[in-house]
Length: 313
Image 1 (cartoon, helix red, strand yellow):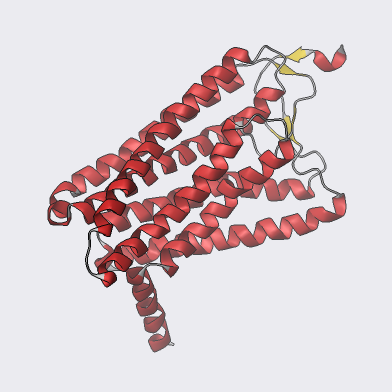
Image 2 (cartoon, rainbow, N blue to C red):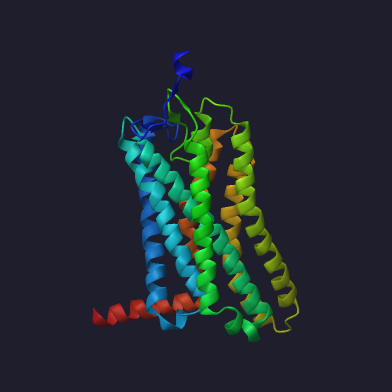
């Protein structure tokens, strides 16, 4: 009976992040792996933002969205990675109630914002390829700013709703979260109340976020593929597909992992942790690499920056 006692959800009570259930001697290996990936995230995303802000040739809607994507990747991985690395060396692996609420809110804010931003980027590519003559008119600075601001607004609303629904639940005495960060499903599992209504509301909330954004992306690319196939020039088709393939790669990784995590029943917590790694660390690490290696303008801008450093050296 003691294990099932509910405790008042006050800010003074800590949670425990169980993390990865591996042998203790593997913790140092996981720490080094997390450290390496996080260093690459910092280097890649800060570098991408610096290149976009300093090169006037990249002052276009596509790179405005890409700069915001790097900003989002940098911050939502920073919400997760440092605490996870600290816990590899901590015996208690504790996180305060306020810290857990903040982590869930910020992570939800940034991951939802990224979903809407990827939809905006798909629309940008649709206009650029399907209506190139109207591109500068349709993708105005005002519209781009509104799309980004709207993405952050949706992320903020979802963060408030999801964290509010989760942390108003009564929790069991153990308070051990079987995850490496405070995600809503692992947190809800330690509640002592009936979760049926909460699970339905959480599923509906995630569906409201994922389905419209993925629909915009799919419809945009259906029109893009149809238009590209009509291009007679092989070089023109190659250039158009090269521009879009980077974006599709990022979308596939993110939505594949999110779909696995949130739409498949949570019977296998260890698989859920691996899926979480894909969008908390792997995607933010790969995004700068994908967009820089397959983007001629970014590679040229990077080459110029490195060239200037060599001159001054």
